[in-house]
Amino acid sequence: MKEIFKELIASFHATGVPIPSKRDLSLLEVPEGIRKVLVLIGMRRSGKTWSFFQIMHDLMASGIDISKIVYINFEDDRLLDMQVKNFQDILEAYFELYPEYLHRNDIHFFFDEIQEVKGWEKFIRRLLDQEKMELYVSGSSAKMLSKEIASSLRGRTMVYEIFPFGFSEYLNKRNIQASLVQSTKQKIAVLSAFGYFLKFGGFPEVIDASPDVHRAILQGYGESVIYRDIIDRYGVSNTSVLKQLLFHCVRNSATAFSISKMYQTLKSTGYEISRNTLYEYMTYFEDAYCIFSLHKFDLSQRKSSTAMKKVYAVDQGLITAFSLASQFDVAAQLETAVFSYLRRMSSSLFYYRTAEGKEVDFVVLLADFSVKLFQVCVSLKDEHTRRREVSALEKTMNELKLTVGYIITLEEEESVVIDGGMILVVPAWKLFLSSKLP
Image 1 (cartoon, rainbow, N blue to C red):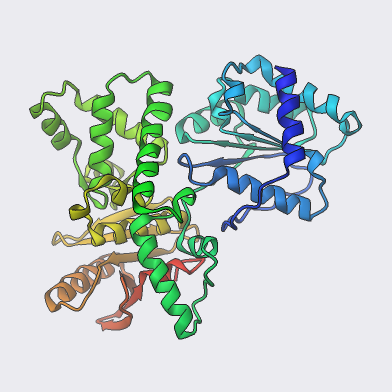
Image 2 (cartoon, helix red, strand yellow; image 1 turned 30 degrees about the horizontal axis):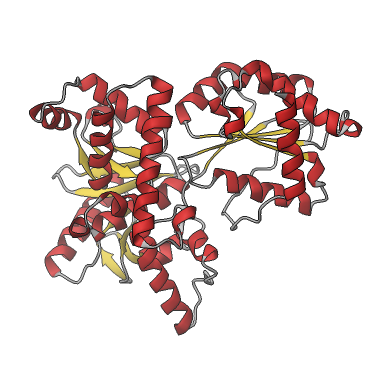
């Protein structure tokens, strides 16, 4: 397999690094002398490879020659028979091509979708212990990576999650100026783009695709998650139930989800499945960064884990791709887009239900121990809707002793004074252009 690796390395160096669309990728600087593996995880096709290319361009801009960068994609069909013993062939192939670099410490190895090779973590550990190159790996399974990292690479990784494009990245891809201070013409362009973003989402490959192509490609992503991230890895044979579960969660994104109800629905239509197996399947979808479960906020861990959960697709474009045109729900798309934005900011995300049963969509716990509340509503123009949303947020603010809350809308903006605090109504597109929470 050494000759194959020589071919891959030489081809990459001859072709050059593709120019990526700029991602909002903030990497922490590791102190000199400390060795860490940079790990990117996220759903398939969300942009991990292009994030690698962005890092490579940054390296080359700092003076690193492309010959000192190695990129291997383990989904390449020439590597289908790859085994852990073949990892050594990568080192031998590279240093036979570039023997003058054998003792350099400014070499950078990028391994894409490395989870395809069982036992990869042992090789990475050996490189950390015995070699000098900088290491970067990516994968599409949070569970596999975390399990393998915990066993062999504990404390020696820097992990970054990669999601489909956020709105600012989407605008950049479409060459639209992303700024909160805009001329009338710029604002019209941004609002028009936001309409498309809300409907079709931010998967990089489909930014400029027609609706039919968008649907076909994103449905293909769903198939890849089912077959490659679940069936191939976990030996699951019940393909029909996996598809039913994925379709249900995507089409009902931003709603409450009950395994028991799903079990009864499947059972009534003739599917043989247990509740425990459905729990396992949901875990698989979450590990693949395709579906997320949102727990109820409660100081009691037990109450939080046993309460009804809400489900969200990783990207609102999936709702459009998996639903009939008549089923498009702007409210669900908006709430899913807000979820995706907030999830980028914090993994400590919950929904809240007051003592009176009123619900607030998102409680965000930040690294500085601050707490922020976000309610999502398409419009507050209807007086009944306005009272309901403001009341739920006000009650939650009182119970959590907060003085500021946010209602995210499609386009409305105002400040609502309440007893003991303030509710800020913010258009979603403005929120999404902020690199940090208000």
